[in-house]
Length: 541
Ligand code: FAD
Ligand code: SIN
Image (cartoon, rainbow, N blue to C red; front, side, top):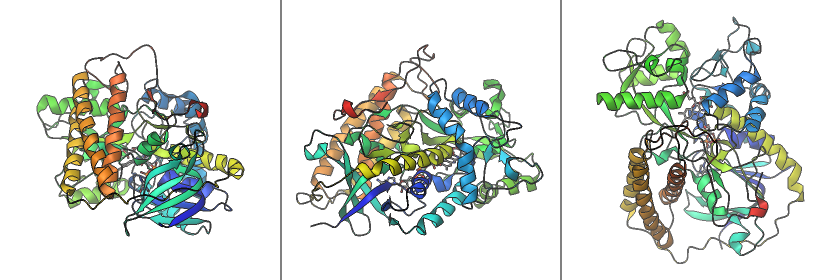
């Protein structure tokens, strides 16, 4: 008999989305927050640039922010989602200020309640509120501090959700989420978490690629769990590559914020010449897909290992005070950014697609919600506008909590759920298979499903991923599970969804660029993939 728990709500993920949602739930509900790392694991705490919102109405407007989002999204954003999120931006920022997030102040300019606003690519106004260049850390620390004080919230760090439990998996025709199986990474025991409502807030899948700005846990677990539970998944071909990650053998995943370009940083070839004006009239501040593609093109053309980002023409004190984290980190690698250009390469950064949801975060399976980077709301279209992601986490985290507060009392969860059955599996002595497959997957995703694609490369990747999946399935059926095996299983599934989505898009749009269909099609359509066990009667609008 394994240990089991019973909650009103379980939230899988403790990033900006999960914690915001937890803090907006009715305090009479019993809530569990699960994180496979510690509470600050995930992308949120590493966010640098800031949060986009219309905070200075004398120089900005909701229409402008909506327009910029749609332009970056290359015509594929869902207008209702954009309006919902943009309109609620200011309230979300006010809430963060009220709970104590120490955003950088700027009394002189007397805008945005006295806070400094920076600029990033694709934004037509200064609208990014930030805490120097460590915005995510400041926000995470504040949210974590708050949830730790809530008596109705239990926190389970180092607990990895393996799969959702649904009625359908138990043989019922009526589809409903009932809970999740969770691996305690400290004790290696699998526990049953029963809940009226399950919320996926588990972040993106950027670790499907060899080079990524994300931490190791970005393995698309929530997207994979939702797919296996019967949820539709949208627009997975739109994987965003951030143009500027530090290029240094020891600097794994360190981002150089777009705000560096927002404050005047210029992209240079190895010979010191600027190239972005040749590609786009917005130069370094063009949307990310354009900048990343230009860098990729220049690197391939010149056979260069990296290009450079230079902010050294700005006064040293300005650079140090705006970008203290980046300054310090680069200095550790012997690069003084006040005097030298920074070596950079693009890296996989953000999953624009995800689990199909409505404005309240509801998925196709009743009782299962998805918020944050794992969800597909329609905000980002074919390319996310910088700093719109955290905004989406705050706005949808709150909308989702409000919907649950209103509906949860009508849900009962009296079903008896089976324990996790590991009676037929043994310990593995073949750990090397997992590390080899992990490496192989991420390398062919980078080489064949990266910034520039072709149908031939995608088909090649598809064959490889199918083969890997059968090996992983075999491993999963015979051996005890581990963190690495679960993540690999999820990454392989999510990679397949990315490849299938990319193959089905017969055009180039936003982040999906293929040499076989270089033009943008006239018709604008999302790529929606439907799992075999999808129940159309529960489909969200
Ligand atoms: P995350 O913050 O990634 O959190 C995911 C959580 O899920 C973690 O707690 C993790 O432990 C947990 N988890 C995952 N799988 C499981 C599982 N199976 N079981 C249990 N727990 C699980 N966006 C902006 O808007 N502005 C920025 O300035 C910005 N800067 C960025 C800088 C970097 C370096 C990176 C990587 C991203 C940046 N982004 C930025 C993007 C943004 O940070 C993310 O999209 C956003 O933080 C995602 O939040 P989230 O809550 O959805 O997920
Ligand atoms: C950055 O600071 O460049 C990241 C911003 C983002 O990903 O939105």
